[in-house]
Amino acid sequence: MAVHRSPIATVGARVGALGRSLAGPAFRAVTARPVAAAGHRVATEAARLWGRMLGGEERQVGELTVISGLPSWAFGRGGTTVGATFLTRSATSPDILAHEDVHRRQWERYGLWFIPMYFAAGLDGLTNKWEIEAGLELGGYLPKRPPSIE
Image (cartoon, rainbow, N blue to C red; front, top):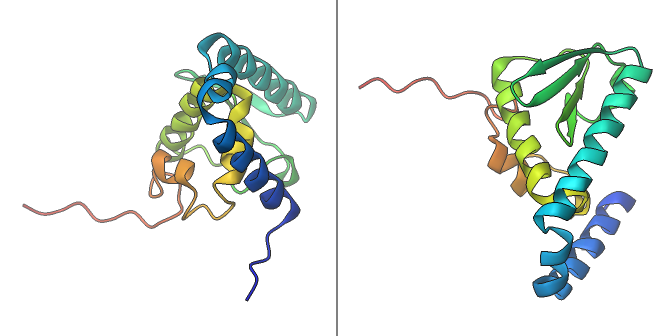
């Protein structure tokens, strides 16, 4: 039985495969600190502009810019981090912001290359390696485990 992917997932998988085939020098070039930093800045400012244009309320939480009060069509799932900007309607709990701060650091490391890398990992948050790295419980993908009693 064939697996059907969304067009975005298909493009992401193809770009990811291309990236893996080029691996070595090409991947190091697009993720080199100066290139990644420039992409991170561009993504951050584009997301901030988007949030402001839509009338969101902006505040700083550590190194993460949080723009809340946005319409639900303006971002994915409960919120989306682009660069160092988290766009959301109201998902601003400390756990979610800790999860999104990991995504900020992922963007910082990979710059704009993070976009195809994220989509290549798949759109299912439970199996996407970037969501797993950010913490599925913190991000609300899994229920929080009760604290262990010792």
